[in-house]
Amino acid sequence: MDSNVANANGVANKIEIIKEQKKLKYAKTGLLYGALSGAFWGLDGVLLGVALALVPFTDSNYAVYVAPLVGACMHDGFAAFWLFLYNLFTGRARELLRSVSTKPGMIVCLAALFGGPLAMSGYLMGIQFAGSAYTMSITAMYPALGTIFAMIFLKERVSVRAWAGIVTCIIGSLIVGYTPPSGDAYPHFYLGIAFALIPTLGWALEGVISTYVMDLLDPAVAINIRQGTSFVVYFFAIMPLIAGFVLFKDAFIVKSGTVLLVTALSGSISYLFWYRAMNMTGVGRAMTLNITYALWSIVFGVFITDLKLNAYLITGAVVITVGALLVVANPKELLNLRK
Image 1 (tube, rainbow, N blue to C red):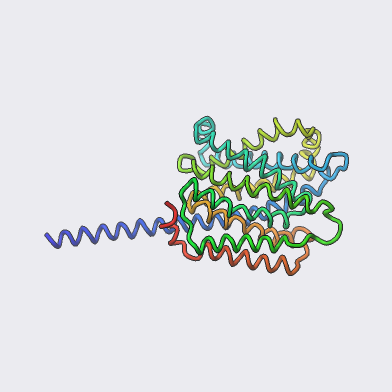
Image 2 (cartoon, rainbow, N blue to C red):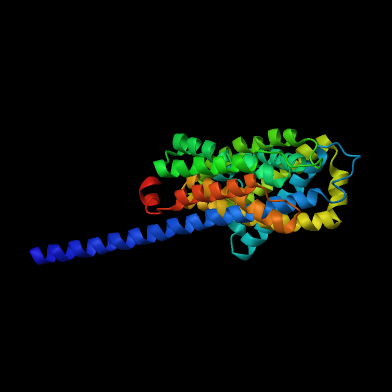
């Protein structure tokens, strides 16, 4: 009898070990998605800066706010297109169409308003007026706010070391954006920095709201709904207000439209990985890994644009890396911290 009990306990322990190993693998995969989301968003930001520097976005006949808003509209529209193709070829098209009218789908639409027209507009305005590297550095503060929201509304627990990593990443991002670029390339630099603060709130709210429903929606479906909603709001609500349809048409058929199409592919991949990471590892850790885009924007900026390295950029990049390592140093914590 005792032997049977011992054997049963042994089998139960092995099952628990296997379950924990699977959970740990799941958590590590989520961390990888978070890191990749940062890399692709860093590339997205640099390419957005390139696109906005091309004709017709540089046409002085348009008000200064028209180009970034039209760019944001096109970016999210192209991203929705890429994500729809992904869902179509992976057999999720029916789920996508069915989910739009459900309660979880409506909640994702709400998240889209914060992450799209609110956050993306501020983000593009920041890139237009202050450049991609500096805008990304400022917007990288959003994980702190997102983590606080997640603790309040999602009851997520965050370790002391993870908090230290979040704060370290933010400090590194602020170091990167500490001094304005030299020359007169960005005469409205500080206005751009002010706009860059808007996504801090928008993306934090989007992340928490979307994570709330992703146990009911596939992340790929959720992000497709998000991008589609954002495009619809831009196209039918914002574009008429700014008289942006002419610029939209002109940009669509020239080189800048092609650059935005490629940019949106990078952005859609980043968002897909970000949503998966939030679902798998929790909001705070996913957001912190995502903001390594401030580091990646420097890397891509050096190779794609004429970004010049300086002591602040290099120091900030090192600090961001250290902060990210603090967050991912012990994935086993995710088994206990994400309830």
